[in-house]
Image (cartoon, rainbow, N blue to C red):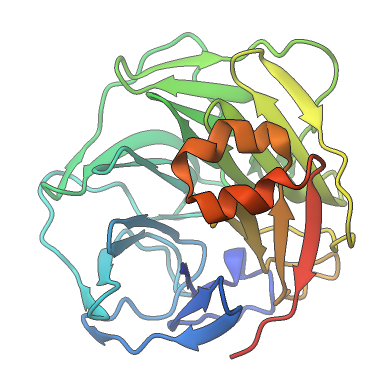
Length: 318
């Protein structure tokens, strides 16, 4: 089951609405259901981060419409109980539109975002040990520290985090920055060739092995619905030719890898109105070869049938 936390009007861009409910999508039946929750509720918010760690969902930060926050809340996905655990160490400052990256099964890495005050963009790094519930703010090194930003993506690839895109005010970014988590050293990828997705923010991203997939986003007043793949080993970008129904260009959507496909939900369209559709991106044989060891044989069979990525738009019910 794919679980999506629904305080989701990212950056207040979709009518300024804020939500506090949690809904789950069953990818087998394509039905939504609202989760009944109890405990220390985090309240309504948007532009927060959420990662799942086993049977728990950890959310951090965001804004409740009046101020930015740095609270940490944990939802037990089995019992539906929210808790606000006691955490050692100094937490990151209040922020929104940051990234939270789960590395392994116990480390959540926070990078960047925008803090309190106008134009207060960030590029700091904080690590939460989810098992010990302890914050650490490591000393980072490197000659090319990423610029301050929000609305970027950061995904894990081995012992590294790959950061792409984002914006700082009206300035969009397109560099690929890599943080080595063993040494906490930043480096900038020297991309081979001239092919690239350019500058953008508010896109979605997932990593599969040594490949990073970028979907949609906004840049220089253009709303994208394209799909790009970054090969970390070859340092090359490839724009994927995708068949199937063409989705609307969007930003501030979410994408997760589940059941052997990339599930893309929501976001804001060109008119900055909220979108409520779910789209499945079925990847081809190149994806299958890299991912096949991680998925059940029944899913492998369906993936083997296609070699070209296919975009499928699905209606879902409640």
